[in-house]
Image 1 (cartoon, rainbow, N blue to C red):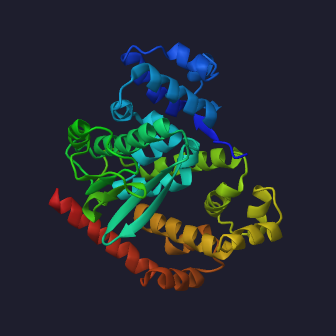
Image 2 (tube, one colour):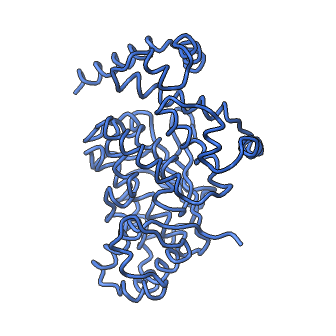
Length: 350
């Protein structure tokens, strides 16, 4: 039987803060879900997804508020997303922050899976809720999408920043509720959609964040990667765990598949087979992470190209040069120069 995984305590606290302000009986909801109240004091603690679903369901029954999910989104804080919340805080742009959701969202819990897909010139950020209970599912979708928009506005220091469109898989429960959705999101809304998602413009992705700190971000990511590696192994999370292991090892200049397999406690042959079952290869994943890190190092550090090549596990700078040009169409030096030019233009526009 498939389980609902886990939920982090920081994610639970967002609902607790809202429930307390609404004078709901939090203690009764915790008891109904068999959650030890002392766990709420432990930031690194987790509860099962079944407990979290039961907790939210009990609060919904108490409140009777059909806009519970939207209203609870106003209580989002950086800590609501565990270390991921602080990683995105330290990013330079909103687009860079959004890209950090995929590898680290499991630290928040298994409530859902995020995917990023191009839609024309825009980016579609989809969220698939893992919880099957219909009432909880709809409210959680409302909460997650609204929390993302609220947090993004805070990160950008721009309360007027709005997506192009919000899509909900559930129906609009009552016509009079639309006004509340519109006030919160400030953009066109679509209900009864195949999937729940936020459509974001290229300009929105380039919005600068209020506290960029690339050195801090890399430190936080190293910490997050070590946390990811401690989580239980499941087939559903294999690719995420492989990506994070590669990323973690590449920061030390290691790209050996045997070592990655050792870190995952499987044999190299098993690793190859399981990736092949998902239409992937180790080399493909390694090159994707190499490109990600290369772009980061070129734009956000003063490391020489030779030093970057070594950090990424290339035997010599020439190999890095050839691979990077194959990935991007630019040499590492040209890419670094083009990035510096864009930064100068952005600074001149402020």
